[in-house]
Length: 285
Picture 1 (cartoon, rainbow, N blue to C red):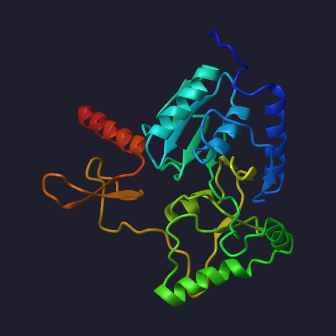
Picture 2 (picture 1 turned 180 degrees about the horizontal axis):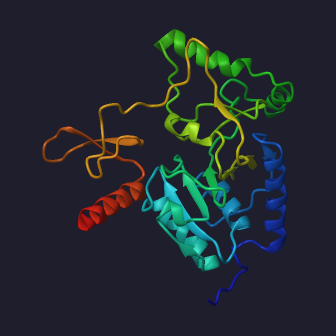
Picture 3 (picture 1 turned 120 degrees about the horizontal axis):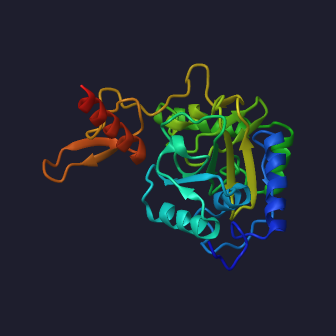
């Protein structure tokens, strides 16, 4: 393939710098490592942090999957895939099991990840303490002293006001019994997937110029209380209208014809794969 720029867009020096910061993040699970966020041909806030991680790590033999809120075909996912493919020529896939690098916004795939895969999460706000402490200097001190009472206070106030913890996404987690970390705006349903994950999880915030990581087989626990334990979103008694899956994160939709509430897999490729598997099973029977 003839390209007029360096492989994976960045010059080799830029890729080495990002890799060095990524290695430091892996060595200190949950710790936010500052890095020199580069200018990208997409606007900050549209996945530049995750994209920089992907471009610094990807090789010619890698297979890339990009999803945005569970969809492989959203505008954000399609444009990121196009940029990476145009600058590398790597294979693109919609199948989670076939990918070696998975870049995602707001979701962790339903298919369990393996130890030869890397999950890259796009992060808008990497600092979990920002909601009550605006100073970067102070948040660094709080992390250094492991002073996280403010994070629990936020959850306590939710319980006092609403009767339960109301974090719809980005529920803070404790990594390796040391750092409180923002897991990116994934739903609570996905938080447990980080715990002891076989895959390396990297999180990048381009606008905030931070990268952090959850190495494979690392303990990740969602913040909660003994008498108010952490709970995922529940879809008890509901299933996907297309594939029938009931143990996945579901989107609530309104059927255009019946005007009734229906549910559908948020992870579009998982839903399609399950439909194909069921069809193949029917053929064999």
